[in-house]
Amino acid sequence: MKKSENFKSLTVMGLGYIGLPTAAAFASRKLKVCGVDVNEHAVNTINQGEIHIVEPELDIVVHSTVTEGYLKASLTPESADAFIIAVPTPFKGNKQPDLAYIEAAASAIAPVLKKGDLVILESTSPVGATEHMAKGLQEFRPDLRIPVSNRSSGEFDIYISHCPERVLPGHVMRELVENDRVIGGMTPKCAEKAKELYELLVEGECLLTDVRTAEMAKLTENAFRDVNIAFANELSMIADRLEIDVWELISLANRHPRVNVLQPGCGVGGHCIAVDPWFIVSRTPELAKLTRAAREVNDSKPDWVLEKVGLEIARISQLNPIKDVKDITVACFGLAFKPDIDDLRESPALNIAVSLADRHPSKLLVVEPNISKLPRSLMQKAELVDIDSALENADIILLLVDHAEFKEQASRIKQFVRVVDTRGVL
Ligand code: SAJ
Image (tube, rainbow, N blue to C red; front, side, top):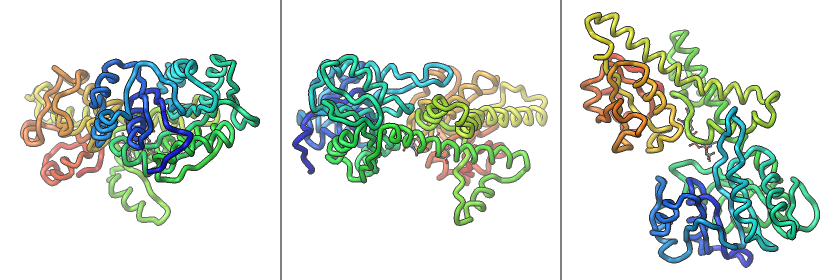
């Protein structure tokens, strides 16, 4: 296990999907870690060695590091050699980034900062956010020399860096260690300092750059994926209109040595890919035309899926005029935002199910093998059932997420007459 003379303690601001795994991973490398969150329930849960979020293997690491005394949670930050800020960066309307959580975290750590400390912003941020944070710190602590502009030169008391997280939900504990890290320093020395910290944990390569490039690198990765998924989603709608099977089409096109079209779906979910491209648009709206168009295509896909289901419902009523629309049963297969996880946050599949329940008088069944009870938005509106019951009772199957369980049952589901398959499972 690597050791550092400079970094023996760490304060992590924000104990969510990134902050808690990061705090626990550093604590497992024997750093004294203080994790800070405004959520009292999260703080109490962690201090009992338990976790308040779902992420494989995280519970084991939190339990052992809390028991051994390396990790503790708190409502207020403690003095440390390094600070990592991993708080949310949501929108504040009109798709403009809201930096209020970063500002609050900076104002909370400012009183405990001392000469020689390292402050790293990990939250995915629009370009300029790290400089904004540094200016905030400088205002709170005029007694310390803090670099506030990208590519600053000179000597400073505090090291400021941006090191965006890039881990995939569901694989966070492995990817935290194995992934390469982009580390942007306000000065080259700031980047070197941050590298020294991450090297205690990261086995991938630490790639050094300046702060703005690091901010943009993260946005570029997720926008790249969004644009490519948008192309697949657009193709799926074009192929449908032209009576072409989009799955066959993509697999044929992908046999070209330089083509790799991604997979269409019912929309793009999660809190990263559907959000981050807007941070690029917000800074350069007149230039980011393709980035914006991709977002719009992906955001329009759920409505297109709902239209397809509406057409199937209309077809059944035409064929059976005596069957009332409310006697037509639709079964949604999958609610999560992607396969084989239980995460329903920002899930287009869940939004489609809720819209179906609200718009159509038909009965709604839901098959979601990864949850044991329906989310509040679907309670009283739908029934959670297993695959067998759905196949027995539904008139229309709407396949929204390609969970492993559905792929295993593909040959049975395929025999069903009316299936809207948004993921190409069949
Ligand atoms: N999706 C498709 N078609 C595809 C691939 C994905 O429709 O071919 C959909 C998924 O169903 C899901 C959404 O896109 O709704 C996003 O899923 P994802 O698995 O592509 O990504 P996330 O949001 O779980 O994690 C991403 C990752 N970024 C990249 O792969 C570039 C991860 O590495 C980032 O750390 C994470 O965002 C983040 O925190 O920013």
